[in-house]
Length: 186
Image (cartoon, rainbow, N blue to C red; front, side, top):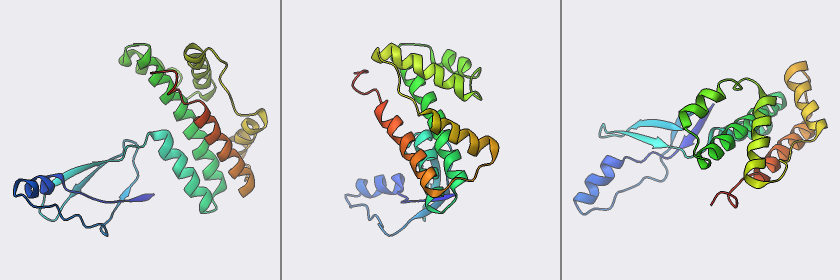
């Protein structure tokens, strides 16, 4: 899947600034790039300068967006899969953020995460206890019926309706929004 980004050449920008000129940004120019996991895209301008463009979305955000796009296009199974994977990557992201907050060596964290990388229930368990450590509260979770719904779609081949998929996606988003830890980690 491709996304549309606005390319800017930082080298051209600096050259124009050095000359005392404004950089003429063409706001109607877009670049279509294949979405990737790291959000880094390279671009070569008309003058031949190679520039890198960084999209600041986390992987869980990109996966959620892909789920929303799939749902918008009518691909309900793909949407559920993307929403579910987004939630799993969110658990990993939050666990990593908390480990940094707790001064855990990041190489050790990543090595340890390899043991649970393909096991969503264990990832959730790690998230639950990290959340408890930081907030002193039990972490919220998706309702049992939504977890069963996800499993039927992913493992049993269920083709969900638009409304079921929308409900699942909304609940994943609510869970992500309600478990952000900004107020606890300042």
